[in-house]
Image (cartoon, rainbow, N blue to C red; front, side, top):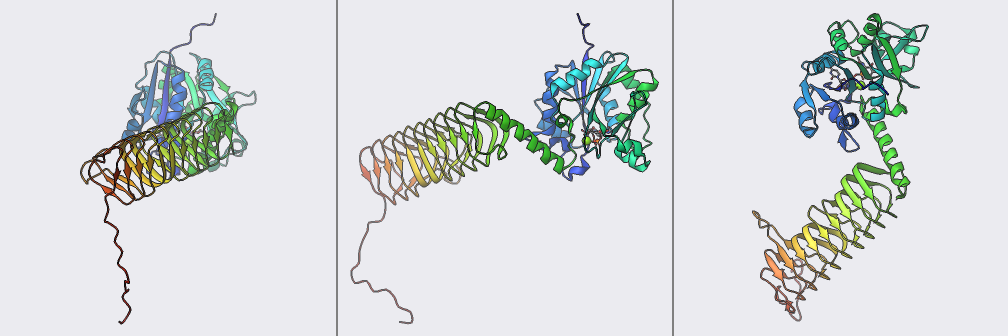
Length: 463
Ligand code: UD1
Ligand code: MG
């Protein structure tokens, strides 16, 4: 039987400014697949179920804490930000001596829990475990320097290798991922001995590796299954490269589960997309938040769907924008439709081009096929809502509801001034401004009467 692992604490370093991002937003809040970078690292850490997770924040600390308010972590402030070694020391102040501490950078979002776990398990009272990786292009990364017998001797930062003309270090393409695990008591002591004598005038966490060797700890290394896992995000180009990698991974997952993608390179999932069987998604679609597409749903090109559910067999045509809504089975939406929060379309509803629906329920088979607005409304089954018609739901101060009962036919260019009810089977003549309830079954017309003046002479210029 394996001896029980020592208690594990995790420190996530997330205080840096991210100068290379050239952004007001703290680096760890830059979005990747719709979520902050830090949320991705924390997802992997959470799976390890550590005794404690400490997140070191500094630059934009309040914004970071607010954006991740739900995370079950201990927040620690590093101010000023004197480098990764300083950040680790500040974080360690919140961690008890016994056991092992795993240090994770907040800017390596694709790291997998399995990789972290394997690394943490290799660290022990006399053993320092370092996650390294061999990259074709090691620009910007700290380089692993090994002795003749292959033991890790130290890490040299890229900038310092350049300043010292250290050709050997620069030629090495085994890099420091920034992720490491060490016995906590020793680490605390080692960090207290760091000095800022380097190109960046900071306390480098990486300098503890040389100390480990001197102090007689074994330095063992491990590698991730995939180099992408340890890609650091320091600028917008790296952020975009990782975004494509995440999206490619998601597209593969969808296709493996049977989803038809017109082009796996042209889909963006910024949240969770759940699909039933025989779902087809055309190019250029963006899915945000939690989106559920039931069996047989078809999504046309260039649609945006955020936090919504589309029931079986429904079709969303090109260029439609859906948010916070439900689309019923076999419904037809778009092209160019907008469904806003609270839109609930029943089965076989048709919403056509340039139609906006907000906070409104539509019963089975109801149709609004062109140029209409339905806001704060209850629309019954089989209602036909004409082109150019709207519910005037807002009086400038308050919102009011419009009730349209089953089988109502609303002609074109009508204004239904809420609160108002159109009774079942009512017909509203085109061009009506309806301010009072329309009785069921009747024709209601509320517009100027048509008159014709014979022999009408148009005015003439200069006449
Ligand atoms: C660091 C490593 C480098 C490694 C690379 C991997 C050091 C000195 N260098 O370089 O060897 O190859 O990561 O991606 O450790 N941070 C703080 N407080 C600070 C400074 C940084 O919390 O005072 C945090 C940052 O928010 C970031 C992480 O530490 O999440 C790494 O900092 P960053 O500036 O990106 O270091 P790199 O230059 O990438
Ligand atoms: Mg970095």
